[in-house]
Length: 441
Image (cartoon, helix red, strand yellow):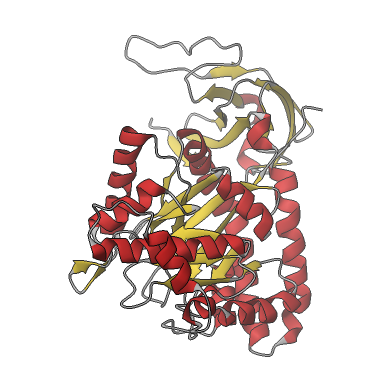
């Protein structure tokens, strides 16, 4: 007789956490909620394996001749609906626990993925957000505050309205969202551009004043600074590249002077069937490195592929190590708002902590045309993949979605939703403390 397999979810409660320090002895006291497992508790099996195919004592899992592997069988005690067992989670790994119960005809099974981290990474929490969006302040279709609320609904802890040449829409979003008490962090920002046709675009994030207003001020010193910088560029560069590179670096320097981050936007953006910035221009800007981060993703396969290829080339040639940021360049509904974003490892999603995470390369760029694909260091990406599946998708994002929906209602004048918005803020603040266990005690 064939045994029917039933993959279950929610069959157990009271998990002690999901991310732990390395070499932690974890005591599990799980409430068994699934009725089949409670009824057939005599057949329970608890099994364990980690991602390098080793078991609790560090020895490799053994194999039968037909190459079917066996997980470690974990000793447990079942009493009054509670399942008791202990495991030592060693090294920086992912760990899997499988719990089953069966009869001759049915097998019920649930699996759990845990993770252990070294303290240097575990001291931070993961947050995600999109810092490149557009509103009716430039060429987007929604007002700034609606854009911010939709970013919360997409699952984000932080965002920035970055309209072309416009700084005030980001302030409007902050002014509208902050009083609603959601906890969503909205950063000051704009998308600054060169004078003329705008060959290169630069995200200004967190600057204390408008970069575009300074650049366009006829009585200001932008042109003077740009011409002075231009004199120090390599003499063998064509005039076209010298002009636009000097403008780019002058704008980036101003962003930094104003306390912001300067991000090289979509280096391989095409405009009217040609690259907006020539390949020589993009290559020179990247090699000189006078900016804080380079943008990845941007909802376009070609842009993502080309910056990935160039980044790898520069790593090989000159040890290039600039942080990468994923961003949607979000304008309208035809773009999926939850595909391109950033995961940062920080104390909080406040701008100061975001900037610290970016400057110290504790960030992962997530980008793709139809699905989310993370880029960054191997260690951070491996951790991000775990978080995307087991933390954000399962626990974090549903809370953000509900709160984002309520924010849209509140912005439409329905203040009856404010208490629930506050409750969801607390749930989102409490979630990391339950998911991430930062002490072995």
